[in-house]
Image (cartoon, rainbow, N blue to C red; front, side, top):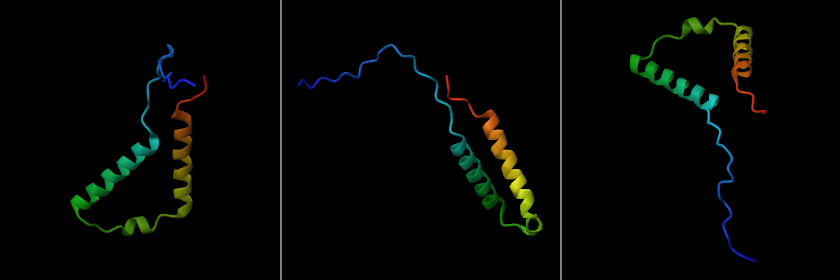
Amino acid sequence: MDDVDDTQDTGQTRTRKRPSPLLILAGVAALLVSGWALVGPFSLDPLANVEFRWLFVLAAVLVGLVLVFAPNRRK
């Protein structure tokens, strides 16, 4: 048995890598938290009156947008 490395390029074209949506969301969240820390603590009382059903609607809209604009990986 030969110890030969057969990892040569077989002529396949490489596809362009796209950024990860989860990493983008994590980066935006980190920027928002750091901006909030730089500005200084402020009252979050107006957010306390938000009903949870609207948060579910917002989450559903965001998931829908991600599914619509996410690239289709099938060829």
